[in-house]
Image (cartoon, rainbow, N blue to C red):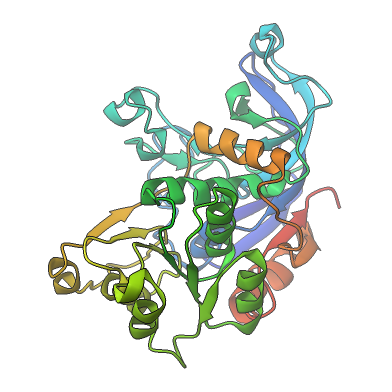
Length: 357
């Protein structure tokens, strides 16, 4: 069976000798159709610090490198286990589904409190083992990780991450919001802010001309270029009657970006980090201290975020047409996928892999 296997940074291989998975009683077997390349996948491609499984097995999957990549995927159910078949709300053969990729232990204090995205053993299908969507058949999902029919299955995971981030930001009606970075997650954050109809301004900071265009299309009120604009001064002039935005969401993963966000938000404002960082980041704590500003984080997603995004898509509150810029085959995933995302950022926003060809 064919699968895209991660052997370490910069080493992705399409292998044809992977065994077909068994469908256990609590599982469903899915034939993936499309799989998105996520920023987390790109970080893993560049650094061995993102998927730390070279020698120590993940505590929940038991896997080390190589692993099968792909956690933003959709496909068709081809078999269901006996336990799933007995569940009146479970999926059925023929359903089109998407993966909610979080792996959690369900036992630690965080899981018991419902914060499965903060599990002591947190992992993600297709990043820490457990199968992965870049393969012909996949059978390691419980029925609760499956979402029902919707037109935008491959967008559910990044939109859910963004939805969770907006929830952590506790944006109030009329609040002005600053979004640092208009990559896939930043654009999803803009869409989720608009879908939840907060009504304030959405100021976006981005370098890429193509991503600026997408940010405006997604609902940004103003788009700033940090090379041309004094981001802090412009934010204060645009937002909060001269005080600055109430909330900033850091989606760029650049030290200058998060520090600008800390300076730009108003007194008692909130900065929410959504970005994944490979190295420690110097943050100007004095920018937070004076003004009693707060720094928080939002990681991954929960099942409730997943369900909220599905409802928003099906009601039409979330509109995501046009966000996918490239569709490629599995054997093109390095040159036209990962390398393009690194080297052609101005034109490559979201890449989907057609797992069927």
